Length: 278
Image (cartoon, rainbow, N blue to C red; front, side, top):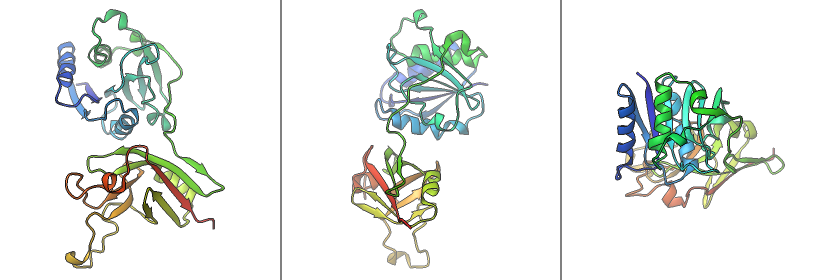
C-alpha cells in the first residue's frame, strides 16, 4: 500500500487538511496518509525544510511527501516533483528542498505541468494531490512534468566559517515544541572546524563552553535532588538530528519558560562559536 505524507502550515482549525485527505482518498482509496506536521509557521520555508529533512528518511522507500508551504502557483513559484534518496517529494520550487540537497542530489526532477487541467486555486488540493496519486499508482514523473536541472536555494541557511578568526557564525533555524532553539551548526561542522579546541558559544546573553550529547548530560546524579538546582538551566546539546541545539533543562514554554523565551532566541537569532587560537 503506498504512503503519502503531508507537511503543511494549514493548522488543524480550518478545513484544509481534511479537504486534502478527502481528495486523496477520492482519487486513491487504497493508500496510507501520514501527517508529519500541520503546525509549520505560516509560509516559513526554513522551518518546513528542517522538519521534512529530519523525518522523511524514517519512512519506507517509495513514500511520497507532499509539502504544502508557500505553494501558490505563480510564474516565480513553480511546482516540482522530485525523486531523491528513494523518496518522492511534491512541493513548490521555493528553496524548501535546500537542506535535503545538502546530502543527496535528485535522481529525477520535473516541473509539474498539469495545471491547465485544473480549475481549483487550492494548490495542495489539486496539483499536488493529483501528482502524488499519479505517482502512487505507479505513474512516471515524465508524464506529469518536464525535466529540469536546478532548483532555488535558500540564502543564509548555512553557517559561515572564518578560519582566521577561528569562528563559526550561524543562526537559529527552528524552535521546537519545548521552546528549544535549533541552530544551523551541525555536529560534523563543529568537530571539523574545532579539532578538539576549547571554545565559547555565544547566543545573545548566553555563554556556553561545553556541548552535551543529551539534555541531562550536565546533571550530577550523585547529588541529592534538592541540591542539584538544575531546572531551567541553559544547556547546549547535539540533538538527534545532528545539529547544535540550545535548551533549558525540562523546559516548558507555558510555565517556567524555555531557551527561546528566557534567552530571547527567536528564529534567525545569531549564534557564534569562537575557538581558541591554539
